[in-house]
Length: 116
Image 1 (cartoon, rainbow, N blue to C red):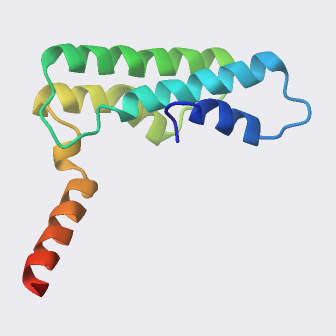
Image 2: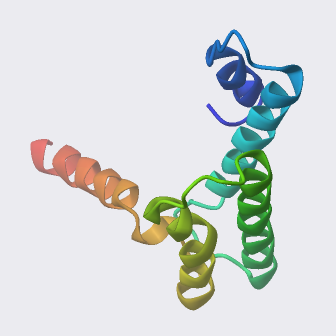
């Protein structure tokens, strides 16, 4: 949902009557940033260049969010996304291989073999 036209659709669906065009564009930018970060969560190993890009995208997301809502409190999940995720990727060279999604995929395959 945060790829292709997803960011525009999400920003438009917020439906805030007082939302200005600049606010809508910022929401689109934030959703686009999240989609770019999400692209790194694949069941594969990441090369150093991809990790550098991820780190840059996470820092850009943090900077854009801070510019959009400068007085907002940073919740732990945002801190984790913008700081810890790039560190984890650099240490383990992956994000998607250690996610729940990869385990669920393996579980589905095992169930298919067992039921055969």
